[in-house]
Image 1 (tube, rainbow, N blue to C red):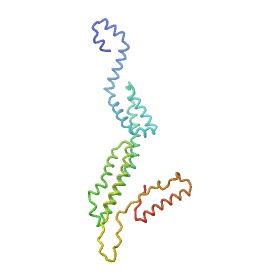
Image 2: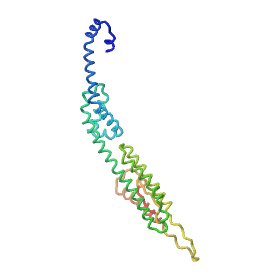
Image 3: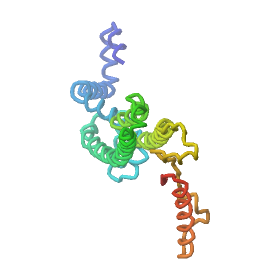
Image 4: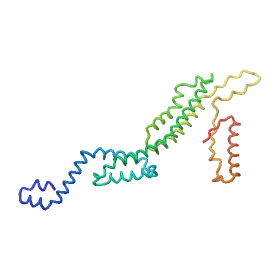
Length: 260
């Protein structure tokens, strides 16, 4: 529009064009004022709104279950998609605060049990190593390398978890930590084995000493019951009997039990 005026050399035509486009020029003035005000005063609010909304999208499913946060996200989306959002940007600070506060609470709630799980796993492995160090025959097997191999992945996962802000990824890290713990315990079971002593008694060998770290028997109660809901005392007793039989079988075999 402006180019037509700049390129017009005839003054009478210039004035005629000017009068004919008076309303458009007034609209243009308003647009200019809005855009100028945006870059002078509102650009930071706009950028922060876009950044926060983008970060919140990774937990959108959980935030939709929170009434205030869900409403705030809808408003944020509407502002970001509006062709002229200038007179709505004053709401950005309150909207981002509401949604972010809910998001932070959800992340904290998701992280707490995950952190506890990994810390417990690391403590369990370290307890196994400490127990092995107390046995003269196993002391040489408990090396710094073994400890790093046993706890390294869990420590790495714990570090990732501290920085994670996606609830879905937090859940994924918990699953990965479970697998890492299983791998670490298997490593200890395979490594910390008491070497057999030479037999010189002609009468017969003494029974071998029990291993310091017993073999595991993983017991998953949910796999012992295939009949759906437990609805009666008889169902309950049947399930508990199966669970007890499984656990007694493990103990009789000198195995330790891991409940999953």
